[in-house]
Image 1: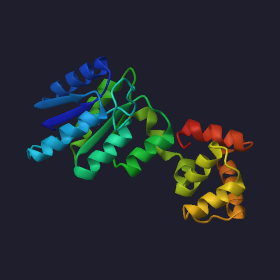
Image 2: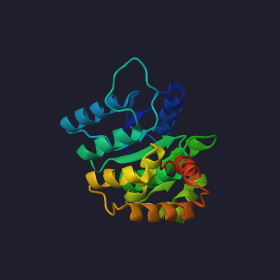
Image 3: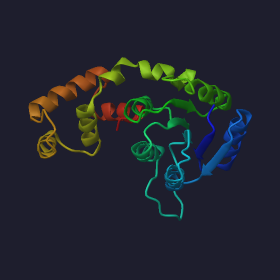
Image 4: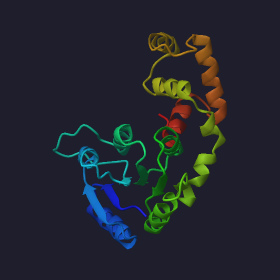
Length: 222
C-alpha cells in the first residue's frame, strides 16, 4: 500500500472524504494542496528530502481566485510532476466525462486511474488505489470504461485536433493552409485539409462544420 500521498483538491468536502479513504487504507502520510502550484512544490521538496511521494490524487479543474498561479489544471500539474518524478502513481478524481480528454490522460500523461466523481465514487477511489498498487494495473470508473473503447476517438490524431481547433477559431481553409505550413504540420495543402475535414464529418456523422465543432467540444477535442 502507498505510504505517502499528496491530494490536490480545492473543495474541502471532497478533501475530507478522500482523506478518510486514505486513512482507512492505512496510508501513513497524507498532504493536501488547494492549488496545483503548491502540490508541485510539495513534490519537489519531498524529492529533495529523498522522501518522495508514492501517489498523487488530483482533480482536473481548480477554481480561480485572487491568487496568481502558474498552473490552472490537473493536466498541467501531472505533466509538471511527471517531468521530475516519472514513476509517481497518479489518480485523477474529477467530474470530467469527455471521452477524448480522459483518453488523453491515460495515453499522453500516463495516469494510473480515473475516477468520475459521483454517488459511488469514494468506493471506486478505494478500489482504484488498491488496484494500482499492482504493477502495470490501471483503473477507470466502470461507467466510463466504454469511452476508451470508442473506435472513433482512437482514429483521431494530432492533425485532426489542430484542424478542429482552427475551425473552432473561425479559421478558413485558405488561412489554415498557411498556418499549417508555418507550423510545419503536414499534409498542409488546402485539398488535403478539405479531404481530412470530410473524413472527420463522416467519422462523427456531422451534418456540417458547425455540427462537427459542437460534437468535438462535447468529446473534449476542441
